[in-house]
Length: 245
Image 1 (cartoon, rainbow, N blue to C red):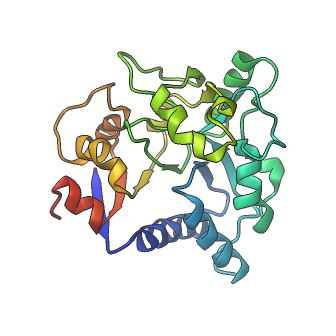
Image 2: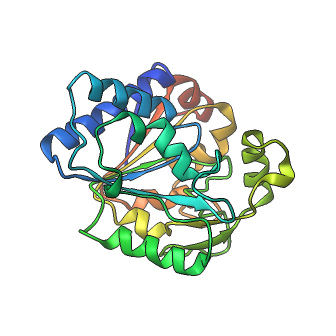
């Protein structure tokens, strides 16, 4: 596992956006695994700027998103389909038919199976972008006594619901279930890139980059088993966990 320490979160996002740009320029029909939440928004803004400047072409790229809430439609302003459209897809030259975000409506188990099919379709993702939850969860693979390898439905923990409550009018509106890629799906990607910032992530990142333990109680630690995993953090977070490059 490689750790890159930057001077700021803006630099972290620039580093990752450049990784994606270089990948797509080298492989125009690349398959990207994408993430939602506050972490990747500045990355997507930089990719939009690069696309508009003619530095990268997304016209042949395929994408699969990590997860989606259960119980809200793709038109809901907190759905992850809506998030991806309004933070990236609407502003780049990607064919939306080549983008996949699981449906959060209808038969959740069938929707999870469809996500698993998309993960496998055409082979492994060339790059999987990740954020990390305060408790180390990756996508909606929550800290638990066990983790599930394939796409599945997941009951969200109280800490995750609390962390996501800021995006909704009230906590009671936060979905309590989600469809998510499994850890096996994520680890199947050819390259995994995780971005993190903020002192709330200290325990999770410390477990990921400072400790030798792999544990389902910090799902991010599974990335230690990946042959091409990159963790990009800023100096503030690196200092807080005691990491020295």
